[in-house]
Structure formats: C-alpha cells, structure tokens
Image 1 (cartoon, rainbow, N blue to C red):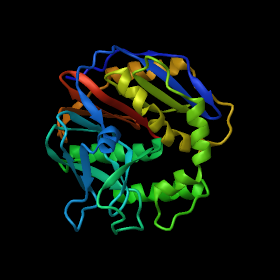
Image 2: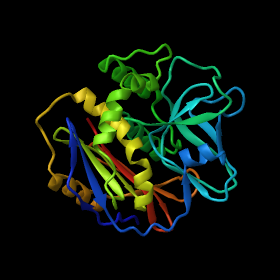
Image 3: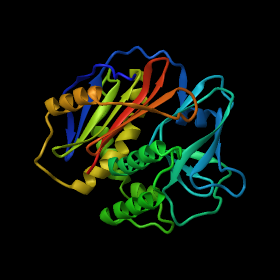
Image 4: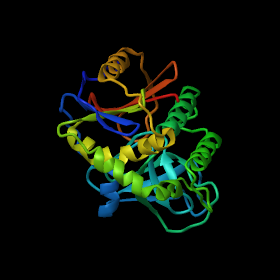
Length: 301
C-alpha cells in the first residue's frame, strides 16, 4: 500500500502566467543514485538504439556504474536515429543493461546522427506528460507494459510547434524549444530553486498542471530547472493572464493525492511502481525501500 509523504507548500515564485510552488517534505531519502544527465556526462551510462535497426518505443541503457541511475518521465534524450522522451521514471540497476520505454518526439527522422544518445536538458510540457501518463497507465492496466499512444505524442509535438510559431525539418520538439531559448532562459532565471525544497507544483494561470515530488532536496535542486523547461512552453502558449492559483489550492490537491487509491504495476528496472487515475488527474510513483524516489501528478488541460 502506497502512502505519499505529507508535504508543506511554500510561497510561489511567479513570472507571467507561470507559478511555481516549492514543496517541502521529509528529507529521508536513503537511495544512492546518479541522475541520467550526470551518468551520461561521466560516461558511466550509454543509451543506444535496440540494435542497428532500432525500435521506436524502446532504447537500451547500459549502466557501467556501481550505483543506480535515475531517468525521469518526460525527460528528452537526443541523437541516434530520432529524439525520444521517457514514458515513465526508471531506476536502472548498477552494472546492468536495461530496456527502457520511450516515445519519439522527432517524427521526420529515422537515421543516425550519433551512435548513442545525449541528454538534452529539456523536459516535456505538462500537456505532453499528460498524454504520456494517461496512455501508459492504460497500457499498464491492459498488461501491455509502458507503451504510449505514439500517434497522440506526434500530434501534440506538432500542435505545440504550430501554436508557438516554430518550424522543424524533422518535426523535432527540440526545434520548438530552440526557437524559444531566450524566453526559456528568462523564465528559469526568474524561477530558481528554493533551498530545501524536495518537490515543486506548477500552475499556468489559475490552473494546477503538474506536481513532482522527490526523495531528497538534492535531487529536486538538480532537476528543478530542467522540469521547468516544459512548463515554460505551457506558459508561453497561455500568454499573459491575470489569473493566479493560490497555495491553498495546491495544498488541497496534495491532500487529495495522498487519499487516492493506488495500484501497483509492473516496474521497469529497480523498485516498485504505482499508478492512480482520477477524473483527468494521472499520477505515478516510483518507490524504493518504502521511499518515493519520484512521484508525479499531471492534470488534463
């Protein structure tokens, strides 16, 4: 039975349509792991296509480190035959080779630009994460693993690109982000990590769109800016607004999240995975030794 830790909501950071609420919980995470970008940069991990022919919904991670490596749902990997995003959060075991579930976010390319993948430093928007989480939860319930609805993913990447006036020869989500790099930098500079926070809740205008909780502040500090890149894209689409969400509404959502029924599903890699779906709110949690390594909620737009 999964029970999320009690969390206190801090005062929001705000810039234009985006509000970021730091979340403070018990800092009792005992798991020792590297984050995917750290492991890739150190050469401790390689992420490659499944053989020379490749497979759109899967990649192979080879972990040569003596520690676990954490990949987060929605993070983008670039290179090889086409750019991908993670369908779910995965802890890859030390000294193991693991197949991870992914979705393509570059529809018009199927050719090698590099032998392996690098980390983009970018994260999916809340809208794309909602599509991923909803379809992956459905797939898991039906016993089909962590498959996403690839057609809906491509449709959302294209919709966002058109909405934000970007263009790409290969239909790459990365090109939309690249077209708005200056604005992304502006938002992330204004909305920097709050010391001690082990999570963040994000609202666009008056609507809560996502919650991410981690087992320790050190992890949250490292991924804070990366997670915000996707939410900035949501805010750019929303444009100027006078609506703002109060922190009492975020607290209500967190209390509600602690009370929802959770179902344990098959896990990719190490740990236990739980999922919950209630009225357009899709949540998941990756747990190791009774500690929530990454818990997340996305809300339908």
